[in-house]
Image (cartoon, rainbow, N blue to C red; front, side, top):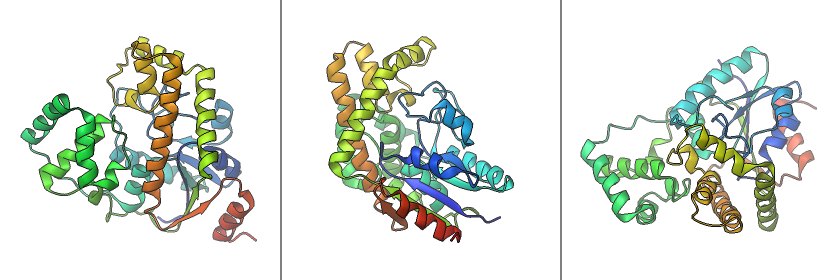
Length: 304
C-alpha cells in the first residue's frame, strides 16, 4: 500500500498544530507526533489542540494511554501505522504533526532491533544514576552519542539510562539504531519544517508558558497526583510537569518555577532544531510564510 504523507515538524511553539488544522480541510487527517500528547489527562502542559479542533479534524495518537504507561518509539510506530491505514481507507492523506523527532525518524527511517542489554549493565547504570546524578551521566552520553543526547532532556532519566545502556551493552550509540528498516508508508512524503527567528521563538515560548499557567497548569498536575500518578513517572518528568511537581513539593516558588519552565523549554527547542536539521528532506519555512507553504504542498499534490 502506498500513499502520500505530509509531515510538519519543528521546535516547540512553532505553530505546527495550528498549521496542521488549517491545512486539513477535506484532504487530511492528523497523526500527532508528540511524546506527551499521547497521555490522557495531560492536556494543558502538552499543548493539546482545543476540544473544538479535535472535534473538527480527526486526530490520531492523542489521549490513547494513561500517564503510567511507558510509551516508546516502537509503540508510536505501531499506532501510527494503524492510523495511516485508517486514513488511507478514508480516502484521505495522513498528516503527521509534532516535535518528537525520535518518533518521526523511527517511523520514516525505521528502527533496527536493539539486542538485549545484560542485567549487570542495567543495574550498574541505575546505581551510577543514584550516586553521580543525571548531569554527570548526561555529559558522558553527550560525548559518546551527541545525536541522541541532543534529543533528550538532562532530567529524562529513562531515556538517558537507555542511551547509556545501549552504548555500554553493545558498543554502539543508540542513534545508529534509527535507520534502515523503512515501512510501507515511508515513500512519497513531503516534510515541512517550521522555524521562527530566534527572538520570535523566545517570545512565543514565554507567551505559551504564561498561557499554560493561566489556564490552570498547576491544578492539572495536582489533579494528576490526586489520581495516583506519581511525580516519578516518566510522563511526569516532561518539561513543565517536572518543574510544577517540584513547585508542589516546595522546592521553589511560583515565579522561579515559571522562569525555569521557560528556560528549559527554550533549551529543548534548540535540541529539537539540532535533531531536525540532520534531515535534509525537510523544507524549512517561517510559520508566517503561509502562501509559500501552501504552494509547496499544492505542487506536491499536483494541485494548480
